Length: 213
Image 1: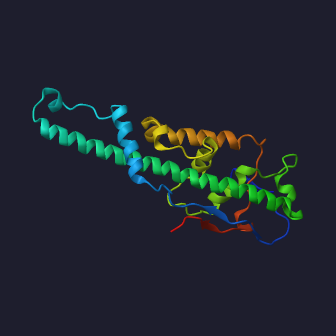
Image 2 (image 1 turned 135 degrees about the horizontal axis):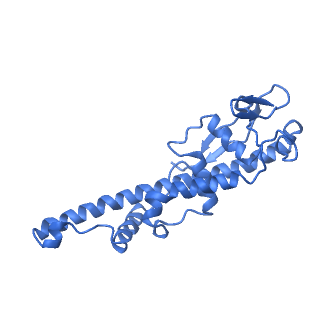
Image 3 (image 1 turned 120 degrees about the vertical axis):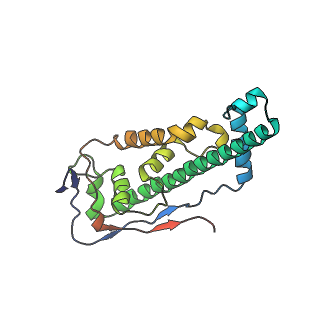
């Protein structure tokens, strides 16, 4: 076992670099009908009464200008909600790809004598499922702004990405990061400590997009 700072790394037998299965991710949001999503966002804004009345609307002065301003602010908020929702969807898609990749990596480890014992929790030091997430972070995988731990947490929270109408504006604006990160850390803590990391220099893999361009 090697220790660097406050982190320990499992000892991988030999000196070879191991090729892991490719990480397949749908890197575009995959929402085909953005117009429908915009309609859902507009409906949510109206139902939740998210556009407060301005003083000039209350007093009745300049009703036409007030109406135009309300429409503009409603459109701005709808666009903002859609952007937040698409960010949630992209995180979910990355999380879905990562969890499937972890399952494939576990199968790969199980089929190789020199890697098989690295995932046994009755041995120490050992790696865990969360060690593969750490490996992605250590390898500085380019995600286009997606936070890897949050992505996994989002997939752990939802089996499928729900439509926008299922979310509250509080979730989209404030809560999704907290919920996803909490889900990830709860999942990661299921493996008994101490959990060691996988040495990034000993593993290689490709990140491939499954999106249809």
